[in-house]
Length: 435
Image (cartoon, rainbow, N blue to C red; front, side, top):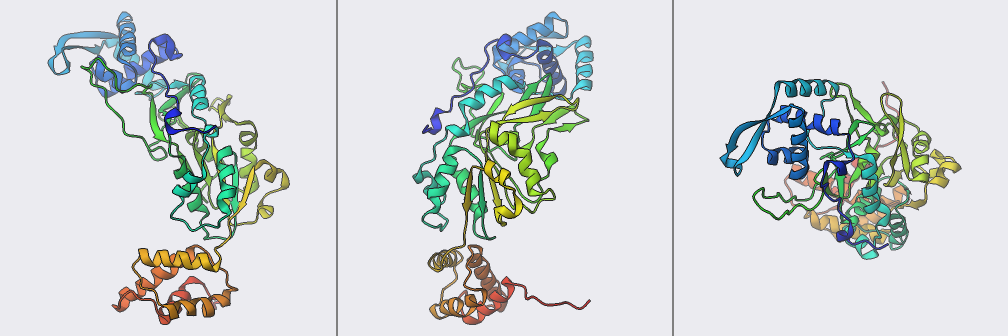
């Protein structure tokens, strides 16, 4: 199961219209709409606009010409290697406007859902085997308990759901991001997919980090781009949601103006990680959110619905990480917990690790430490909160001390008085406020 980054098989570019597995009328209409909206005329630039090989684009142009929707301009463009130009006929313009009235989508040809399903198998998150070295490398900046990687490693490698729980401020979000960084390889994300004649956009530059692309030289006989450019080569995606997550964000988003769909968050995260942070802080009850995931988590498929009410299945190939400050028994029933494959408690650091974090943060933020002030912090201040340490506290206290030093115009050097003033801002005193 060990997968190296180079072993993800790229989607092969189609060689003919037949290999596209799309309705010819749909392809023709997208071609016409693209010419109309982008005002392109040469086949080379049109091929780039619809993300198809030149020979397939030429087939579509020839089909449109036979139907008298396109015509040659009769002039050769010297700047494009003597390439013939094409333009819409009056009938072509009418057809383009009619097609735009049905759907505003133009540009990259969509990938049929069934074709994308095969690509998902080739780059499945469940094919990735994360090694201890990869996790250590990705999380080397974090101070973690020695046994935590023993629990995280199998959870990530299995590609199954994972619940991380524990007190707030102890790095659950940072650990989730570290898991993402440990992946390291690239996958192929479709710009859009097609189901039942409907276009669903998937690629989202906010979610997907595209790898550097290589442009083909139109005058070269050798292609540098060797995969289907209807896909974008990306890092494995990571979708992070917090208290803003609602159930309707997991449904197809329909744009009534453009008459197209946008993929929901979990479909955008296919082949990657979906992090539900701060579970229990959403407007939806945690049990309801997990109930929505029951079928995807158990059967590796999700069910979406079109505006017409028609439902269809899409692959669910995502590592779901739930992160919460609540104890699992407080927010889930046992049936829901059974469906979450791994449960990992993230505790606060012990005193030794707390000091290690404090030292690393102080060095990074150029705060000079003082042994007497550190002893005062550990022996006087922390006993007032039962010596409960958290990973966020060193950053908070040191930032507070630096801000005080800036205001007072004094050097960045730790002292007992600075500790007192910083500590006072870390907690709010319980008291009754008279209104």
